Length: 127
Image 1 (cartoon, rainbow, N blue to C red):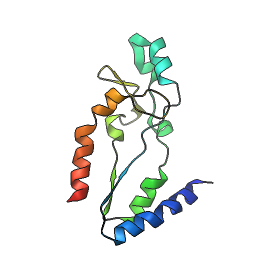
Image 2 (image 1 turned 135 degrees about the horizontal axis):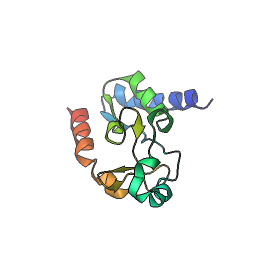
Image 3 (image 1 turned 60 degrees about the vertical axis):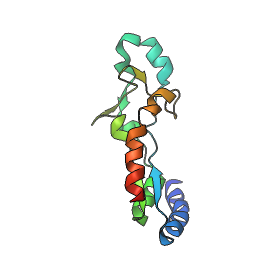
């Protein structure tokens, strides 16, 4: 399995920066839809919830986050998942805005809504 080797590959640089006292902010990977969200939403315009997915399926383990948790301070993690997902599902459209433009990337419009939350995490990491 590649996951453990990915975690160990991240540990060296994170520990190097931590030992030097350099604050690091790791961004958790976004949920990864198992459907072509744009095509699905286009097909189900009036019922875009048909394009939503199970949070546990859409949210893979993130080796960089695991490595960051092993290193600890001054490495911080910004996890914006709760802004894209509820307790059990992840959304394809939020507030009339398409969340994804493909299977791995947020739409620019939705990403712009995350700025204040990311800024909060950046400021916390720099304190």
